[in-house]
Length: 319
Image (cartoon, rainbow, N blue to C red; front, side):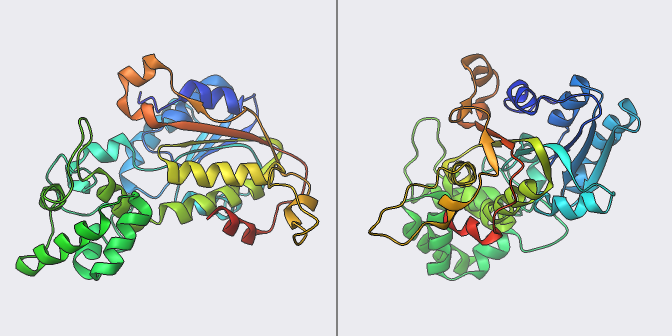
């Protein structure tokens, strides 16, 4: 069984009990779902937009008859997906943000700069523009903005310039082709490939990952019952910042007001979440040694209060 990052900590935060209902919004290979199903006589709805996860869903369904169901779609639409199943409230939601190791290991998916494959990067390979579409179709300024904003890459302009120059000779359609272009511009550090940030940026942009994360947090706020638990694992600062700001504000930590400034509407709202931990939980040395991906992981968890949901446009504050 595939064990995702911080699995024991996620299960502890969600604290499953018999008869409860949970959403694993980023099903993948089913690690979190399997752990929840093993921890209590609960029911789990997995959500994934990747059609290749079906075999993992079939395995879990066979092992836990009547207790697991996979829903195809985006976790940002979890409230609508669960409503179609006759569910309007759940006891827990977990999200594991970003690309899975399973997707990275499949060269044909185009996520990896270490294996040659088509430059795709779509989590749902059946729709939307691919990374190759972006790299070959956007102008230099747009490419630089994408690479800087989503990759936090300070050499974004030089990389964009190199991409535009290279695609004049031939379209950029392969992962190693793009990685080589970036490597000619960016000096790598030990243990850090020069194309890491560029590939991250393209993946986030192609899949609208930060937008989907914001929609998922809002959907969880709507779907969770009072005392329901939310556990989110993120892997880089852009994701963690969105989660932290969302939960801080929903817990009433939006900052105080000054008599010299306009009244802060967030200060007057009842908190819709209460933190389960102080700050973020990170992986221990043992897990990080076994799984290098765990080194950058952060888990933030909170408990839903009985307060009304906050306005959706408040998420603009977390942008």
